[in-house]
Length: 137
Image (cartoon, rainbow, N blue to C red):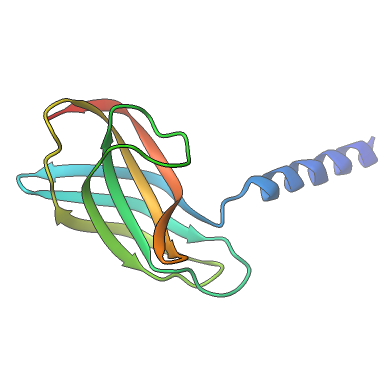
């Protein structure tokens, strides 16, 4: 019985490790508009890599006609801010950045917060949050 329990724990640990993201949001995230300024916040941004340092990181708020599921994103960047580079096995806590707000074309949009890393000459999305509520602009 003990062997079965230990095997189950090992399998679960491997499953979690296999699906852990290198760079990720952790905890609560939000966005709040005040006039022409958008505040973007996250409890934590983590670098789960074992060594090295990330590329430059950026948080971006997108307005899209559909929820994001990975790959290429289609929509409008309504706010963005660089948050810097992050050492392996480290994190930024209480991330909060004010950024200029850019109004997308008139419509109703899903809002998506992305974490992007600069690599290979461009920013690539490494994590994202789809918000449930839709916004009208």
